[in-house]
Picture 1 (cartoon, rainbow, N blue to C red):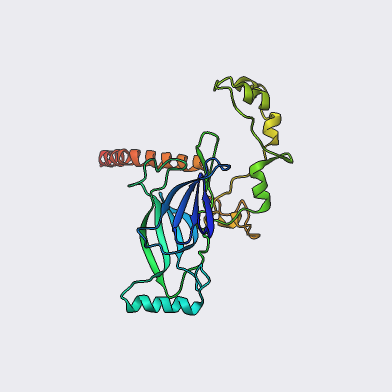
Picture 2: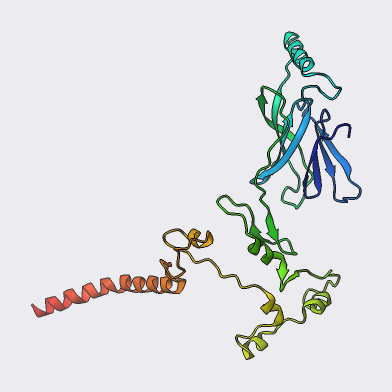
Length: 291
């Protein structure tokens, strides 16, 4: 790369703001041997990439590029030279634009395997915003990513709109057990039900019969897991007071009825609606008999 300005890593690809080369996409699946996968300048519309940040919206990935050669250029020209060059281009009918470039990297319509962990980008310029001077830097947005288990199943989404960052104690619960870093063994045994690697590391699983014979007792592995009470929903604040640590919020206050109570009430209302017409008919017949 002739003039790499900045780099942004996204899973197995790195995006480099490479000056006059535009956006350079590196394959970093093997971090010790990165290689150039693509060089993209939108047919010359990206004049001078100074910075790049990458973010995802819905199912699409976008690169935000600060475009425009800084005053003085790369060859030691002065700011006056840059202005003179821009004026010359205007006099000659040239079109010199600085600003923000938005490049779509992954899209459901154009990217094969876009639902995968790290599909190969298919960059194309979708929007530009012109600035009066060269754009030199792009601020980074709030990171949002997903926690998955070892099979790739989604467990949680971080950085949702309206969510607060996790505090130190909550962060430790994700990767610490009994004061030690929580780790998994390297699994080489392909036997799903009788996996020797898992059994040697965690011990044999507790059977249902053993659980029924010793109710209320936990295995050492279960005891090592931290207890996290699920937030209870409040009618006043939909649970946000509890999550945000409101000192005036009491767990027993304004709690919504339990699922069992709601189901029972619904069944009672259903029976009442079913027998009400029958009761009216019997009442009318009895009234006529008296006459």
